[in-house]
Amino acid sequence: MERFRLVFSGSGGQGVITASIILAEAAVLYENMNAVQSQVYGPAARGGAARSDVLISERAIDFPKVTHPNVLVALTQAAYNAYTPIIRPGSLLITDTRFVKIQSKVDARQRELPLYDTVMEKIGNPIVFNICVLGALVALTEIVKPQSVIRVLSERVPVGSLEMNQKALELGLDLGRNAGSLKKE
Amino acid sequence: MERFRLVFSGSGGQGVITASIILAEAAVLYENMNAVQSQVYGPAARGGAARSDVLISERAIDFPKVTHPNVLVALTQAAYNAYTPIIRPGSLLITDTRFVKIQSKVDARQRELPLYDTVMEKIGNPIVFNICVLGALVALTEIVKPQSVIRVLSERVPVGSLEMNQKALELGLDLGRNAGSLKKE
Image (cartoon, rainbow over all chains, first blue to last red; front, side, top):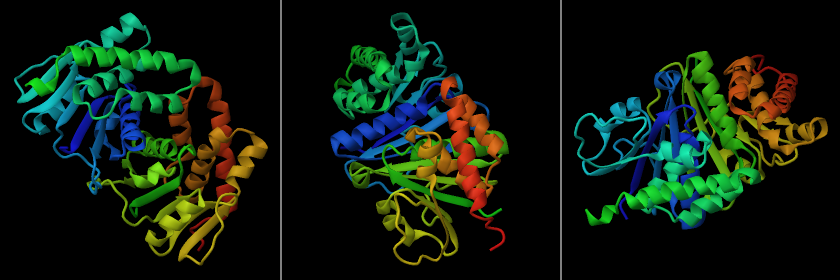
């Protein structure tokens, strides 16, 4: 397995860090892998930007920061502009159609998905947008099984909101699957 | 200012990661510093151990992992045993009296505080134990102002539980202050 190097980026309040932690926990607790999750807060964070790094590997991980991701999730235009220059050629790039306009050609397998609009249409609550994004990410990368994410959600989210979180995950999984498997490319 | 290198350790469910993120956000958003917070998940995490690293500095931070902390919080015996060997001599070491028995002399400024018991006696809800710990940490290190932590709490915790979180923070601040300033040592 190639080492999974994810930069999950957006703005504060979009739940980027929480989604990253859920992914890392799913990989470690239920898939027997190692994971590191980190975020750097600095001048960018003061402007409302959020960037979370996740490394997942079957082997031990020493250095906890992603220099050049092979998976980039960008949920704002600022995040897209900031991080597309650092991705590895041929990386997976997931953006949300509402928040990001693809401006120039990037050497990546791009997936523009209507994640936010789907969450708002089907659930009507932006708080689970990040979980929908996580679903798409899991469908496209198959880095962990959806069931492993659901197990983490079951432990982390309040009982009353578990169903909503599961639904958001399913919406994201569907959008990711419908966007086409990466393995065929 | 010496660079602040914190290892915040305990078991899963004690809220170690959340407390670390709140501290990092307080430093960045309201004190104009830079911060990095990271956690490594691996075999130890599968056993229920949690370790979160926080670096805070007035300068930019490149490497996001703490090799040798100058502040160690250990909320379980396993965490205490695992991480006291890596602290710098003279570091601040905060432990909870209920969960950790000091076994051998460590070259550190040790503060054994009844954080958990105080939270249970005065509030009766273990969910804010981590915020009480954070209060003691802030009182002993003065790395950020209490008001900066309260501002982050105001944005992060549900309105209905803000008062409980503030009370837990105050209990921790009091325990930390009563344990004696580090500056006199």
